[in-house]
Image (cartoon, rainbow, N blue to C red):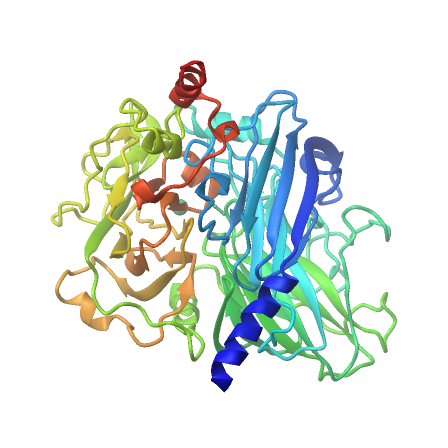
Length: 575
Ligand code: C2O
Ligand code: CU
């Protein structure tokens, strides 16, 4: 009886504090100096990065999004938000809605169920690369206790930046032969970086490849001036990290300080201590930092590229102990980013992440399984990425509308292959590199357990296999394990961690290896599952899942004003 009372009070307290947070956003291009060079960035209400949404668990978020771009459509995806009951608000163009036309306003409405570090970004063409992103931070509901203890918090949104506009990047990627975008010009921390100059340039003999760079000449207040983190001695801070990079895998370190990893993709993890943290596109983390170092000094925060041969300078900012002048430079060079191709180190980092005590364990068995081979291919000389030999091309009618209104011609109803031929040699370039485009989807029954095995392979030419951070919309999945080489059914399942695998929404597929994921189809809707590297997705590296199709609720007509759904809705209104 006593316990019941507590539960009732907790539920009431929760609903009582839940708020509706309403925003009016206008998106347009503006000239900006993200890395001390002028370029065009996509801004939200004139800001870059876009405004941070701060909410508490249980809140409803309403965003009236107006497209002020003159020639492009627009959508925004709320990365990490499950969209339970609001699949139409997921913001994936061609999957859950039509792109918003120039001049039009579209209203997103969804609830944020649980606390954690999320973000949002454009999900039409390569608009994320153009700077359309921002943070979405959810705190525990009022009256609930945050299980982490800290005195203050910071938010670092990490991204990469090119001087070439996305229109010509897109053109290059879809040209024959393909013109690769190359490595980023700069890494940005909260939208600020320094191209071809270094805060640390006075340390002439460090091995950070910054030594040859000139000193930066920005002034305080410039758009590219780094944001310093001002801290008091002997306190603990929560630093929220998220990566919206288009391409780069990053590593962050804070000179002289240990980091305690406590959250990954908005789920608590078993805390562990590290000197530096790998963070891939689509991931978010929280780390705790204790300011226990010499309070008369400042310290570098460095972010460098890993996973691909870096050709981008480290991004730097300063951890400023308020007991030292903010302008004082640290007394030694910045931390060196671990070697880019030390993949064993990268995998070891991933394998240190376990869910926190008390997290739900995965179901013991799966009902459906997909084994998805990732390959780089050609179609008539155009470079593509394909999954089980299908390169995804989303249709003109969003899937969600086609399945809701049963529009047979909206997409190919034949499901793509559930596995690949195991005699395929993943260690060498494809012998028959040709592939085809497709728009079929994987349809699952409601509330079943699905396993997905991602299988990596060699690219088209040379002895190379790339990193792919795979992100699933509408779900968290358990990361059951990683392995080298080809996944062996009936054998490799025995290596799964079924006890405390981390719950995440993004998982890394390492070169020449496999990654095993498990999730439950408990969210009626249509959900994108794709590589979070923007150019890879652009070249077809994704699949689409659908589940609980007869349980999809009402979809606002405004989400479906294109393709076959437009015609369907017009007829329905007439009849
Ligand atoms: Cu942040 Cu579909 O991605
Ligand atoms: Cu990829």
